[in-house]
Image 1 (tube, rainbow, N blue to C red):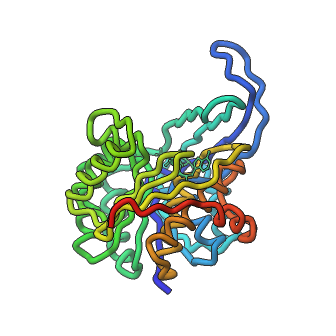
Image 2: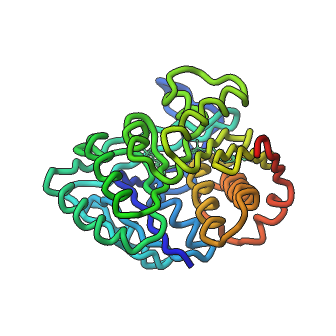
Length: 313
Ligand SMILES: Nc1ncnc2c1ncn2[C@@H]1O[C@H](COP(=O)(O)OP(=O)(O)OP(=O)(O)O)[C@@H](O)[C@H]1O
Ligand SMILES: O=P(O)(O)OC[C@@]1(O)O[C@H](CO)[C@@H](O)[C@@H]1O
């Protein structure tokens, strides 16, 4: 089976909680759902690992609060390629309101020095060559500019690594110039990239086509409860998962989708089958506070109700 690694440059502890409504400027009592070692690439790796795909994980971890990450890697068997750096991994607070979306309070963590970055580039270019797919996920920590990031991605590309990129803002824009093999922006990230709002499915498809014209083989646009689109040389496919009625936390839905896509690709599923599977994994993700698939059987009823439509091709 193809070998997979994920890279998280800006890891995080996710403090996840729930309350009816946030009252700004007041004391809010929050039902705590958990404190999880996370960050986008780690979430992707956890889901893939649950699905039976062995994964290596790399990027940066702050040496001051590394404990729960090391415990996670050992307990589930993720190959640890993380570079420890001075300082703390950040804490991100995720609050789900009963009648609203998730509010993210993403704090700052470690700062990467030029020497840290140089070491990371040399080491990662070396170990990434041993992997068929490398998923590069999440934002950039302080000290890593979009230019440095894009330059590193270009070197990965030149080394023949298939890069899956899931990032946002300046990192996404810079990363796209390195022509990753697959990207998965959400609807909002696509709007930010194109510079205006996209108010219909057709407008989203036209913008995604422009992204593909940058030389990106696979463009997947996730649209929350409205599902997703996959544009490739084979055409345009849409997936609509059954709407999850009891949303606990949408944190990690996108990461679960990336994991589902990689699962389908490494297992040789068709584009339609892969998107349907990724939709089921991501729809399942919103029904829980943490990221992962504890029991594969739970995906089956969701998968059976994913609607796949071929729009072009
Ligand atoms: N309420 C929901 N019901 C069913 N499926 C959902 C729901 N919300 C999200 N999904 C599934 O999760 C996928 C990814 O969601 P979304 O577009 O919100 O990703 P994202 O914004 O990248 O997520 P993240 O919060 O992890 O950054 C969707 O394409 C869909 O398949
Ligand atoms: O700041 P980034 O790297 O874009 O996002 C980080 C993050 O919000 O992404 C994951 C959910 O997708 C969380 O585990 C984590 O806190």
